[in-house]
Length: 154
Image 1 (spheres, rainbow, N blue to C red):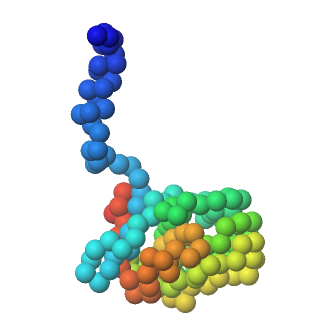
Image 2 (tube, one colour; image 1 turned 30 degrees about the vertical axis):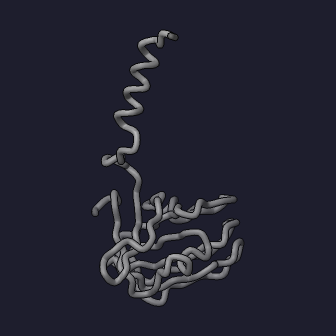
Image 3 (tube, rainbow, N blue to C red; image 1 turned 180 degrees about the horizontal axis):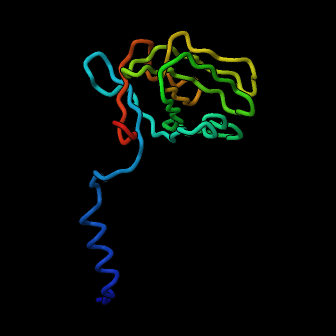
């Protein structure tokens, strides 16, 4: 019989004790889209863009974005917004969200490196950028409800 050092036993105990448990204190910032019954349809772990500098940079110069990742732009007030794809190499879906957390406009598969403005059709307070094609795969539509988790102010 092989003797096992104490630290190996302690590590094993720790892994068994905590294996499979959820991290209830997760700091992940999440944006979820809900179906008509209030059930989560799709969720994205997001980075926040809250300052003018972060708004200007966005996802520029990135070469990839995971399927469940995105960037949430948070603005002070609700107004018409305009984005572009300058120096952005990934096709993106842009989801414009109002202050009541309703989707007011979706721009699907914005073309990489395109400098033409992409305006919202209604005022928005938030804009979520996710990988191009995800709004279709997730069934995200204008008028849909949004839920924020671990987002400042929510």
